[in-house]
Length: 152
Image (cartoon, rainbow, N blue to C red):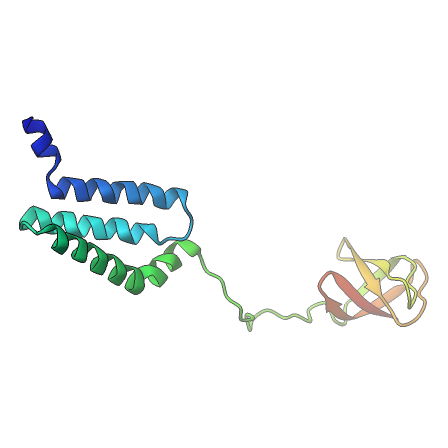
């Protein structure tokens, strides 16, 4: 029966609760449960140093978990989330295609897009006038994967 007393120490129980919560974080997405795991480990460390009542343990668990969640989630998520930006890089020239020349590989009409070859790649192309196959065109605008062209 002594092994049961050893097993039921609060610091061991809180450590195991934290371990289970950390494993649950890998199963459930969101990066929230991990902070509660760390909160459980904080309680385990404090219980290792000084005995606390069950109410004090639960209070410390809730407070430490919420403080960690609110204070560190954005920072930790940034470590795992990579880098993303919604701003355009000023060094990228979106008009690098404008003024370049391409060759028509499929007839282009004002109502029906055709195809052009530009730098060894075939692109969908639109024009305001009819352009025959084999004609050289100048790119006036790029929109996604479509080039707006005019005859040279």
